[in-house]
Length: 250
Image (cartoon, rainbow, N blue to C red):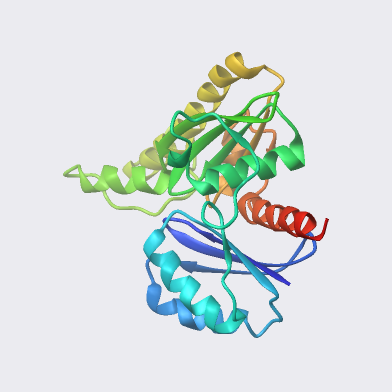
């Protein structure tokens, strides 16, 4: 089986693939480094043949790679290091684009075609825009839902710290519900409007794909998202590895 790992700012997501099917998934908080050895030991109770990693956290990557090498007895593939996403990147400075964004774009193109907009509701909300020619054009980066909610409480005198959840109504009738309404409905409106503006540039027929840790929470409030795929990055890593293997065997 293939072990695919998406190391984000908040969580590390692990998936065991047998061909195109996810057989098992694991998750651990990115900052809880002391848990890495335990979860790797647990994962490697399964038969793992190869590993591929996408990361936005270099320090945590080094620690995980060390643990994986002990079990796998060879180095994992790391996007942007020893394997590369096969997509034309039109960013002014291509190396500035996060590997997770390129993997998401690659997976979305493969699954849904182009033009498209891939929106990842993670620690940050990222919009990744793909042209009809399947070129990575760039996008937008916005503070995520949890960051925004935490910042609101931290930088005000009277607003409480609350957990991210669905609002009871658009019009909040107490402080907590008003904050949740502002975050959820506000970011949904932002998502829809920014999506429409991007469509004016790349085509109104562009598909809109939602992913990330908070996609299930916000999807019902967004009118422009056509499809959701919470495992888009992991599936992209599996696709990328399959492409590497087919090239090696051709």
